[in-house]
Image: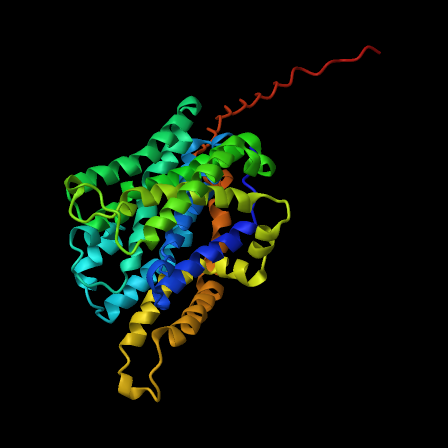
Length: 390
């Protein structure tokens, strides 16, 4: 079993993704420049790629049960601590909407709640994407670890196709737009295409990944469709589907996610290329790679920081400052403190849940074979003394 190697440029790519989301939430951007939300789709492709390459590396040489337990234990160490810490803080201060949404936050089903009842206020609307990933984790590892190899790639392709089909069905039912964006089946194209990329990497190797037929197809098709995507996003009036798809439904809500999935799959594959180029030099910048390392904390905390700043009465401040002037440095400060004091120390515990160690939990103890006691040899009675001949 060859373990999945760390790909350093992906830290920089993760930094670019969080930078887009961060700017999108903190700095008001006009019109077509309001596009940082696409960083979430990039995160989905990255997540699908990274967890699938780990699972595929474990699949070939380990007990499936041990690999499954190891995966969930290590994911829990990475995801749960600061997520539930944030929820606890919101409960402690009785943040708006927290009690109505608490059960959904605790069970990672908030994306269903915000789609069904979008009018309820919430301090952490961005947590919907964390719910999508957790729901994906409930099914995907089982598929990758236990499905017969000949069925694995067809199952991944079928999972990709679930997303556009689901969006079309929701549109025909005249669902709200948030259904087409936040419901888990509608994001499966990004997550599963990342998984297919990991499958291809396992076949051709990391060094040849960016030159594979699959990645070239994603580059040509995804790059061409991104031109269409940017055109649709920049239109002053939306390009609407016929009325049977609902009133004023912009075409981008149905096709946009699949376009981004293809394009970002190509971007992730390019970031895996060990050859040095302009893109690799960008992703290799120290500050960007560090942003990638603390990206989870930045994602969890930055909206909370913005909410806290908005609670400060304007008259209590010497001058009126936009939220981002305080929000950006405070978000980075909190994320850095969280990384060094909580997240990184907890990540050191992941070594206790490697597949090799977990496999030992399932190993049957060797039964000790009882050795029957050796019967004592009774002493030979002494005979009459033997007389020696004179």
